[in-house]
Image 1: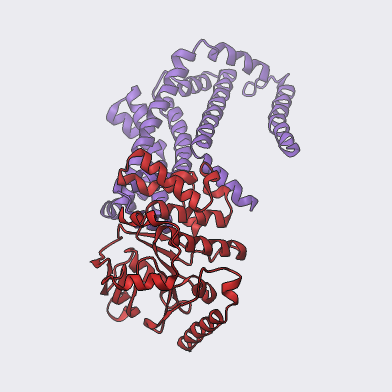
Image 2: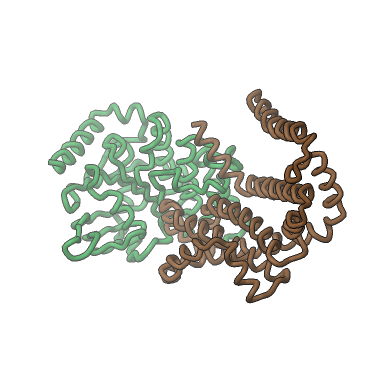
Length: 258
Length: 284
């Protein structure tokens, strides 16, 4: 208990210390590229709280939300189908690893040519990029379902849908969640990248525009915002994960204690 | 499925094993019959014959132990019985009905309980899982689960997860799951191999009390000769490469079995050394 309290203090204290140091060191800065943190915070407040929040932040987050949701559903469903149908697995697996090797951001120019600059292009690029990690970890997770559990399914003559939904899906859950976390990070990256290419709206576009206009403080404010959003998204994800996979986290803790 | 528990109505059976065998003699068909079972893996030059020719039968309400040197193919036999692997020769029957695939009348308790229980389900839900597709009335399902958990002494742990329990308790959950399924034949693969000695004795007695209460036919694969003698009405000793039946030993230990007195009987020692020398000989 004491150790946990200490960890909390360290976890909160260290970033606070870094920010304080940044604040102090940058206080008198006249370097155009590294403005004082105080200035950045002023710009942060002016830009994002909440002047541009509705016009630039919300559309970005909406794109991410929609794109990520589609990617997870498509990734899990496709992964499930590919993992459980041997013919499909033989057909698609090598190709999947090839496509996965392409950096997702590289797809954006193609999508711009195909779909244009609109929100659809951004959502599509998020979907395309974020589907793969979830799909591949779903395939791996299903394939790794213990033979012991498979035997139990056979002996007790579980129906096909019971096996899939009540055994394979939860058994693969921890791996699917790991893939979903990577998908979230990639989706976030692609969200920003898709806004930086030929867009005038969104956090990415604002940040790039600030950089191109030599508004260093605005640029830093954009980057700070991205940091906060990424951090918040991850916290939300972890909270959801620890709810859904409470059994997994608990059993791992038990294993370590034993 | 329901006939298995029709027998449970006459719970508290006090007849000795001997008289049980006498009243089953009148039945023409044993509950489980294995005839000339053969199993090989691979094809052509790679073919490896594991089981050559196995024939034995187990009557209703009997406990049979299958013993043999390690690596002889005990688990292979069991996987064939449970329909997990197709046999390559011979036939198996339950009540005269030939088996093809996992039989509905059979439940299997695996050796490795940690790999046979679903860690995301509570004890109760683990026991419920195989019952879902039977579409039982709600009350009956609940009753079966309650009874099964009570039989293994885990009523208090229904809402816990398997990983919160000790190894012996987890194996009892696996047994409860099998009981709630109400099989006619309960097959166990070295079920007590990975629990401590005290728990092992408890689980052995649990196994015997299940047989007495539910009149279930139980087949236990074990490498422990003492356990085989203690539990069995008959011991099927297998050995050789490929494996065949060395001998079927009728175990005629008197009265109710008891961990202390039964194991101290001269007959116990005699059966033990007889079985052991059989297996020793097979190993050479």
